[in-house]
Image 1 (tube, rainbow, N blue to C red):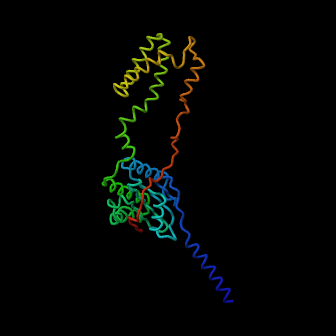
Image 2: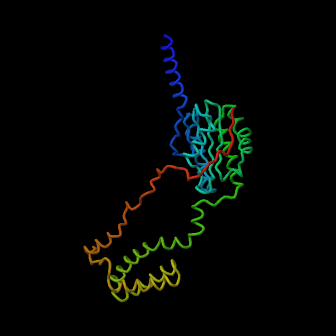
Image 3: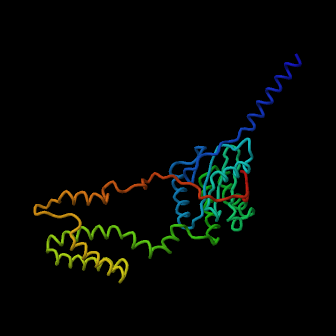
Length: 297
């Protein structure tokens, strides 16, 4: 009989230890605001999402919010660093990510601070954001208000830190003078092909070639300056004189060779791809070292 009781106690103890060791799984990162506790309304989540997206586009830093029922059996500190290592909020190398974790049933929350922001948001400042901006509203049952106030304070603190500009802003500032003209290179040659053929058929071989060269000079000068104007002019004149491209007949129809030539460019209504508007958001590769603060309400 004692042996049976001992065996039962061992089984019960193992079952308890197994249940206690089961960690809360890390949710997939698809948006800046993730609510697994069904606390926030769709409008509230959209409002936070838009605010954080605008901040990221302007500053480059990333902020994510996670609401979940509980982190048990882990303490929120252990769960939060596990979450940060999985989500990698913030830019790689800059490490300017922030995560606000709220465990509603545990009545616990934490601000996890990336390496690159530990100077702007030391542990004491993160604790003040929690105690002064977030938990007073949580105690009143206003979870959206608390998260919104906390996000506002974090944005202000990050705005005071000098960080590398967002990638989009850096590209537009440093590459605009170089990239933009070359983006027009293929369309310019395509238009030159069409206009050269049209002018040659309309005006004749030599006058049409001169007119094509004039148009090419203007286009090349606008895009690439004097050197581009000369190159475009020579190309346009030679192209029109040699009669490459589609030949327009008197009935307005193109010959079969013209049809195959123009189709080779592959420009059509289905040419746009890649930006369907359904892309999900993700972390930028930022690192965390346990900086931040926790609180309760």
